[in-house]
Image (cartoon, rainbow, N blue to C red):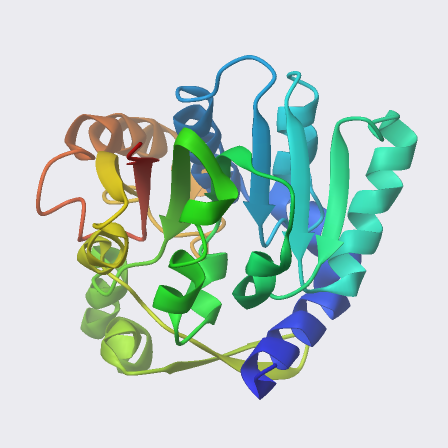
Length: 266
């Protein structure tokens, strides 16, 4: 396991006690999460089996489980999975949700089990410098016509580029670096940015792309966390614009996150 993977695991373990609170308090996080859930729900059949990568504290796993789906929730952070396991117990979801602690680089170790859908939210896959290795493990884990929905951060974010106006050049151009330093709870690690074309190319032999949209194009990224409270009317207008333009180029590439859904060929 690489040192970066270990550091990411440690960072999010330390954050696990406050992760849900941070997500609940930040309406922009909620906006992102709702866009992701709407996309996944539009493709799920009743009682679908789901493999969720970098599940965190299980906010999405619990959401889909309560709607009748079955989830194997994967994360490499013991702290995050501990919080999810508490929720499973409290919500009596033992039949709906199981957990698996390992790096998403190791999901090929899952044997004798396949899924209808593989999902990954909030740019968790941006924590690897070899996304191709992760993506190549998907096909054997999916049933016929199975689908993949991923939320990933691309290389161009208009809101971050605008930070250059304020002289915040590190923020403005950080996505253009080969690797970008990040830190959570005092633990340092690297992030890597990938465009939709990278995902399409990596999966082109076994998958076809059936959905691609940008998220947070006109809506600001999460680090503008007070924006919705200071400018509620602007947020309402910007989110409406976001939904209108999200499926058109270049907005599928120029956004805070992109949502891509692919379907496995028979």
